[in-house]
Image (cartoon, one colour):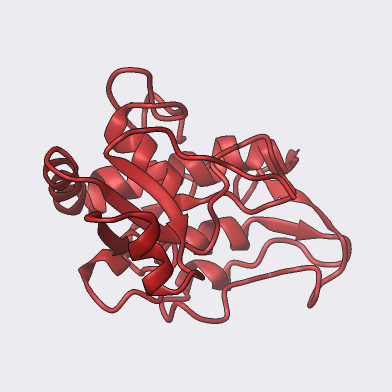
Length: 205
């Protein structure tokens, strides 16, 4: 199993699956913030499952989704099942996953609702999930992002996620959306090298 190590910045990523006492021991004095759909406070709004509404579906003019995860799951194409538009309307944070356990082999992600091209997993991350999540951070969660910037300027902030993989090219593990929050705030790839790029620069449409 591949292991990822956070660098020595004021924002770090760790697993929500760890016991609180373990996290506090490993990150003494740090502020722990759960950014998953299981969070019980406002930071839940950083989850891809949170229904912000009005999330543009890439390469699909006029089509929107309630949440980022709805875009990701809805554009999946399986061997015997095409895209699922109902995912775009799902605002419950439940029943969104379309996996191999419940469907046939996944062939890829359709590049837009009316598109004919199928994107492989890595390209789908680059052209669908990452820009869509970045759009959400910019347009729906700007106040929370600014708070994280301020908090991490004076203390170490540890963002808790179920997945801690920050490597877009590494497909054995799901991509950590917490790592994308860190990249957005710090202006790191895939959102830029000095300042976060806008959705238009990321070629969302």
